Length: 171
Ligand SMILES: [Zn+2]
Image 1: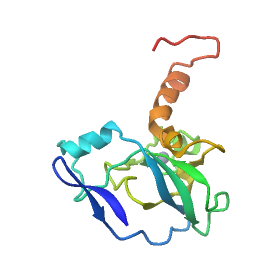
Image 2 (image 1 turned 135 degrees about the vertical axis):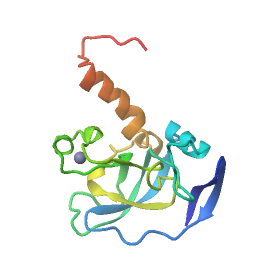
Image 3 (image 1 turned 90 degrees about the vertical axis):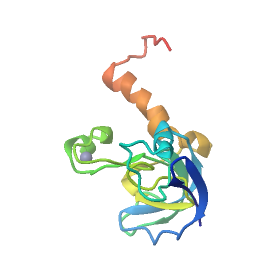
């Protein structure tokens, strides 16, 4: 299957890689439909020192796709559903994760396309709990933005700034 790969500083190629194995018990396998370009991808492409990307790193921290297989413990998702995928792998057991605030995970977070291979590939296995089913009719291109492009300002406005429905925001 194809995957976009950083093979050297500022050199991207469309490579041919092995498809993933069947999803693990708590994972879903997703056929990627849309992937956004995030500044993290640019950092990785530039080979910035702190990125220390893996060899042939696959970029992509924001993506959405169609579920094609589910692990044996996954009961609330099914093949054919369009899902947005959270851009990081979190522990799922710390207090923030249990409150649904994975962006505050106290364990080490792994960011797709930065610390591990990202979404610019045909198929990927991801933790089922880190996906959200897209509403009917939502294009994959919009769903792909849910995790970071939409999630970041939502977090800043409603969690941090406590924005209320009668208040105004200057953009
Ligand atoms: Zn956590």
